[in-house]
Amino acid sequence: MNLARVAAICAIVAIPGLADAGPRDDLIAGMAKCAAVADATARLACYDALNPVVKAAQAEPPPAAAPAAQPPAAETADNRPWYSVDRIFGVAPRDQHTADQFGGENIAPPTPPPGAPATPANMTPPPPLDSISAGVTEYSFTVYGKFIVILDNGQVWEQLQSDSGLAHFMKSGKNTVTISRGALGSYDLVINDASVLFKVKRLK
Image (cartoon, rainbow, N blue to C red; front, top):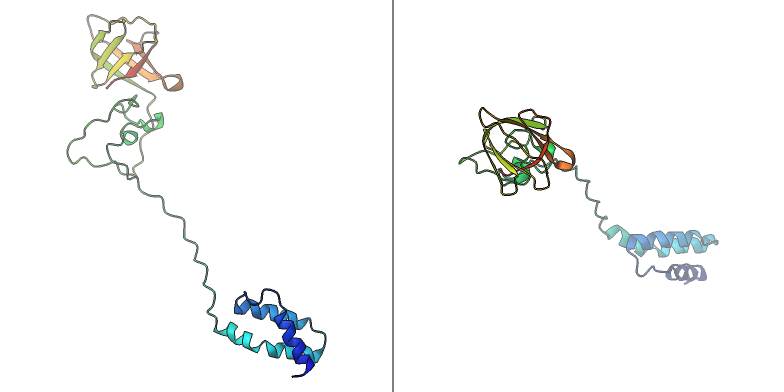
């Protein structure tokens, strides 16, 4: 074996990390090393010595292709059950679209009739309510002087203990109330279109 070939083989053997690399990495590193050999004869011998590495690289399976990017998942349907509190009443004013829902953050959902369908997820809801008006079918006072009213829509509202107002209802004739949203999630009730506001919460 001539000295040029010996030098070429030594150049390949001296490539750091070659034994631990894969065939393709070995080939790339070996060719770079051979290209740096100044003597033409030695350089050719270096390339010749890479022949086993070339065959090994050809036999190596191609690298696995990166998985194709998945398209963004479509928006899932609203699968909340019909009895979900945030579906029927909602915990935010924007989710209360009917008089039956108005003020219902803290009460349990009603029992629907058998086979009642869930609200379609793609149905556009009406705008949220800011107030309701109803007739008073019955009223009473607690031992602390706070009123409780039963409305003709079936709702029951109670004056807050923290409210100091004293309510007056007509003893003859029909009483009406208007309940509207107040500050910080509170509710204001007006009796018979008077100017006095009472802080209330819904019980039913």
